[in-house]
Structures are given as structure tokens and as C-alpha cells.
Image 1: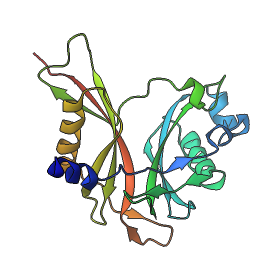
Image 2: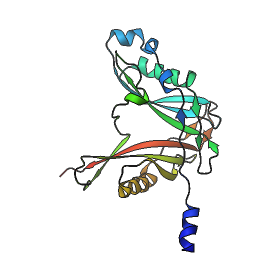
Image 3: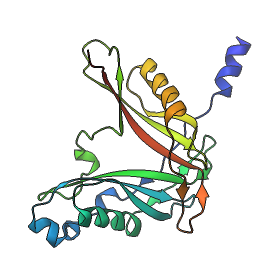
Image 4: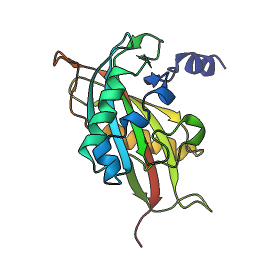
Length: 207
């Protein structure tokens, strides 16, 4: 009984990723640039924003293109200029630097998906497994990492569970071993350890 109590007390609290406080205000119809709108351009832009321990955004890079350079650049500009962020935190609740992965959908009718209407976004990474839980075509888990200056995952916790502990545990174990990131840099080009997230989808392997 004493040993069990010690184990529970010794567990780490989960890492906390960067969050954006004004998501619905990031983009407006004016951001759907005239050239892109005239060509009927639409699609998804995925950007990664470096946010320091005070919540200030420094840099932004395009991690997934919409197919329109204009829209991709506008997404990054809005994320840095307008975004209001709550910084990431370690297991002790201490603010740390982080990288926020923002997913933006560009369509002619709606320029940014609010939390109330988020579509099923593609996973950041798809892993094939021999067998899924009965009745499931896929299983998705969102992980949060503490990544060191070399881009290696040092710690992993589950931000949004798949509902299956075995898959949550396997995802953390696999990505800690396999995933490597480019070093995260602020606007002064200094490298920092960061908290970042990744969405993993498990699908059945080819038979």
C-alpha cells in the first residue's frame, strides 16, 4: 500500500502545449487574398508558430501547404501579428517555450474553422498496425512532447486519448524512439527546448 502511494505521488503531471486564445479572430475575409480568391484557391494550411515562455510569438513556418503561396504566407503573418497565446508549461506548471501547430482551412464561404466547427483534420503521422479494436477503422491519439535542443523527444504525454491505453502507450513509445524535429529557433535564431504536439492515427496494415 505504501509503495502504491509513492508511485502515484511520483507520477508526472502532463505537459501543457501552447494554446491560442483568440482563434476566431486570427483570420478575416480580408485575408483571403484577391489573387487566390480570383483563382478559386482553397485548401488547408498548417503552420508552426514558435511561442516563448511569456506567450509572445516569434517565428512561423509552413508545415503543410494549401497549394497557394499567398494563402500560406497570409496564415503565418496573421498567426504572428494577431495571435494571442498562452505559453506552454512543463509538468510543474512552469511556462516554457513551445511550438504551436495551427491548422487553417481556406474556403470561399468560411475562412477559418472555429472550435465549434472543426472538421476531421488529417493526422500529422499515420502508423500501420496489424490489428485495430473491433469495429474501428482507425484510432487517433494526440500527443504532447518535450523536445530538447537537438530535436529529440525527451518526454511524452497524452493530450487527447484514443480511448485505448495500449495505443496511447504505443504511440508515445514509438515516437520517442523514432521522431526527430529540426531545432526550434526564436527570431534571434537561438535554439530552445520546446513543448509541441503531434496527432497520430493508427490504421490497419496492408494485407
